[in-house]
Length: 253
Image (tube, rainbow, N blue to C red):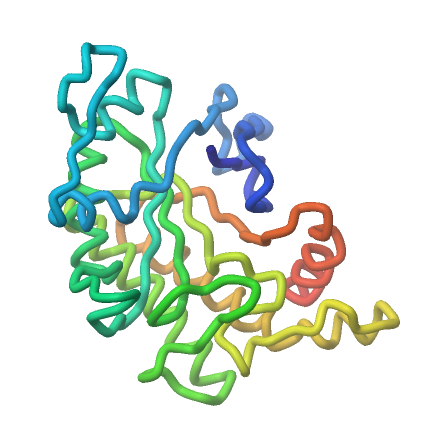
C-alpha cells in the first residue's frame, strides 16, 4: 500500500498506507476529500507472465485470472511501477525484459485502462536503487550542474511520453529509498554528519538534484501532463525526520 499526504508525501518501506489530506479551498492542488491509495507493486508482473506464470483466484474456485483483477476485488486501486533509465539485459540471472520506459509504458497502459491509478517510482539508475546503491546512469554527466539539467529533462520527457500514451501517474516518487541520497557519487549524503549545520550542508548537492527532478515534473505539467502528487521516498521510517528536514531545508534555499 502507498501513502500520500498533502503536497509532498514522505514515504518509507515500513509505511503501509495513508490518505491524501485535503488542502484549503482555492489551493491549486485542493482535493474535495481525502483519497486512500491501496496498492501493490506489479512492476514484474509482465515479466512473470511472459515467463509462463499464471495466477489462480481461490475466491472464485481457483479460476485463472489477471492478477490485477484478483487484487482489485480485494480493494486495490493503485499500481506502483518502477522505472530504470537505460537498463542492460540480461540482468538478475537471465531476465531479458526490464523496467525501461517502453516496458513501463506498456504495463501502465494496461492497468490505467482498467481504472487503476499509477504510482511511478523513479529509480534514477540503470539498475536497482536502494539505501545501499544509487548508481548514476552510465550515460549521464558527472558534474552536479550538468547532472541536474539532465535529470530535469529526463523527468519531464518521461512524464510527457506517458501522457502521450494515455497514462498520467497520480503519484510520483523522485528517487527510490533515498536515505543516503541518489545519483552517487554526486548526490551521496552521509546522514550521520553532525552538527546540524554540517548535516544540512552535506545535503546541498542532493537537494540541487532533487529540486531539478521536481522542476522536471512542473515542466511536464506546463506542457499538458496532469499534475501528480510528488513524494520523497525514504526507507527505514523511524529515521525519516532528519533526512526530510535536511532535504527540504536545502531545497528551499
